[in-house]
Length: 77
Image (cartoon, rainbow, N blue to C red; front, side, top):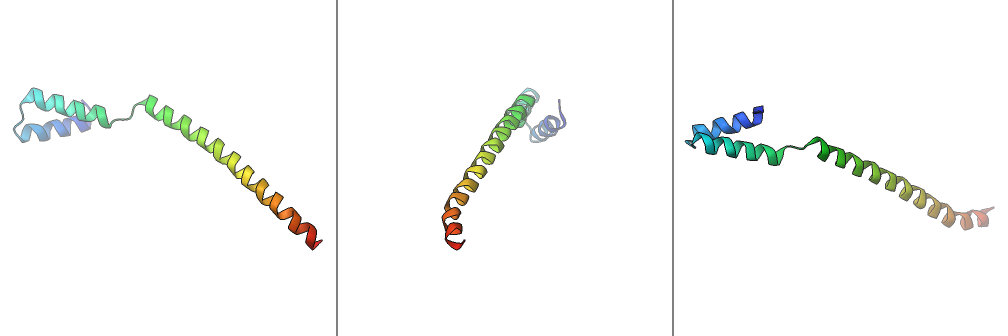
């Protein structure tokens, strides 16, 4: 058992929950709140993809600004 499961298990036991039920509940809570390596890997992939999309959007906004600014620059010069 991990530290978190033991703490939850002990709390259930102090509250008068039978041993088997306390152990099952503590394990269930731990499984639902723990991120696995695959979960973290998926999040990293999503962040990398979104960073790439953000870079493309920045370039697109920059080009739009330049295209809109060029006629103004022509009038000045």
